[in-house]
Image 1 (cartoon, rainbow, N blue to C red):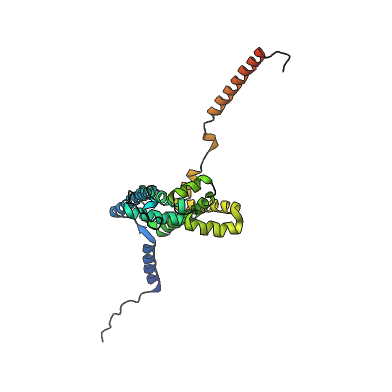
Image 2 (image 1 turned 135 degrees about the horizontal axis):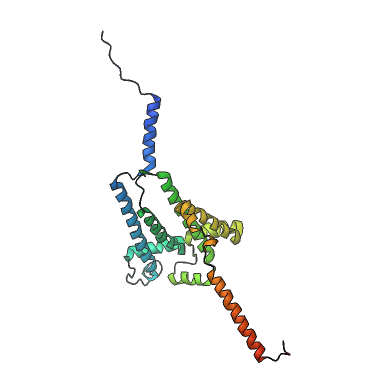
Length: 255
């Protein structure tokens, strides 16, 4: 009887290695081929274009073109059309003046994606991408809270009254986050410091520690202090001139 060769059984180690490789492939964003890098750049250009479109929609928002705000609806004046005007209205109602963070975030994200990727980098960790997205979301939340607090200033209320979308400068999100939660718990003073701390944390998550470090890396030794010496010399010279004029005009018996 001839012996029949049985297929070798797969060991647990080989299965674990294969599954580990599969999981690793899913966790990373591939940028190996030139096509991958091209898609990365095209996504950056698209984000910059969306940033420009959203900024134009917000800047040319007209409340008189929204049927829920007025009975006499006039013809559309928004540069991005009715869709842009409607999206701007939803943004102002939801996030207030903090909605302007959206164009800024899209612009920064697009510029970051256009940065040259080192050739030795084959993959970008998916975890890093999600940290950036979570940082942008947290930054948006912190800004809505800060803007909601700034709504107590008169000139901010004037801006809100000009667009006729309510009195909450942080929108619905800012009112729930700041007014209903933080201010009731730790008052406005504590809520301000907490929001600023969250904003700094969100910047570190969204932009990366190295970028934030460069933003705040102000070395006093590198500042140009020559203006200070020139100002001091000018003050001393002026003081001597004034002193001589006083001595010439005023009687010596009058100090």
